[in-house]
Image (cartoon, rainbow, N blue to C red):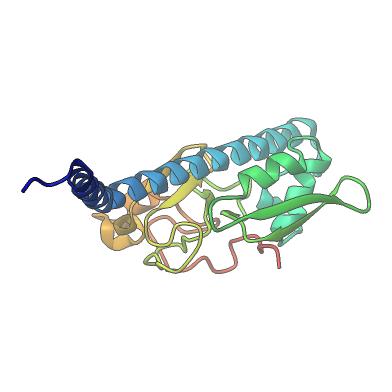
Length: 223
């Protein structure tokens, strides 16, 4: 008695589907890691874009003795919204660009113009946080970091945008990088100097001294 071609085809189809399912299950971790690395790199590039806008504004202010154009820590302001408003008012970025730079999967920031004209309203979570860098701070001072990173503190898997998959840092020199979770703290480096060189130092920090936490060195995020 011969099996029908229809039954044979059905069995073949089930086997093929099972094989494809197994391949997808095995490949998913690598695929997911690739997506996370892509998003980390994109956030790093956004951080550098934001840094370049801040750098241009600060250097223009220094060249023209214009105190309305300065580094974040040289303003009498404590919020990210206020500082980003300065960038918009002085023409270095617009609200659409800011929204793109400050957003990542799981951290969608909204940036829109508000009254009076040329002011800015930020809402939602931000993918990046900015530090109160001053003109007097050295080049290894941290300008920006992904919002899931707290200085010299282990990454929390429940924080956005990247949990403990990695983090981003942009320094005042303009150097930027994507780092692994074992590089989040001093324990991942041979010494303090290496940590402050590779990851960076907080604004106003003493060379050779590291304390966990951001303290008051970060501009307040949108409510």
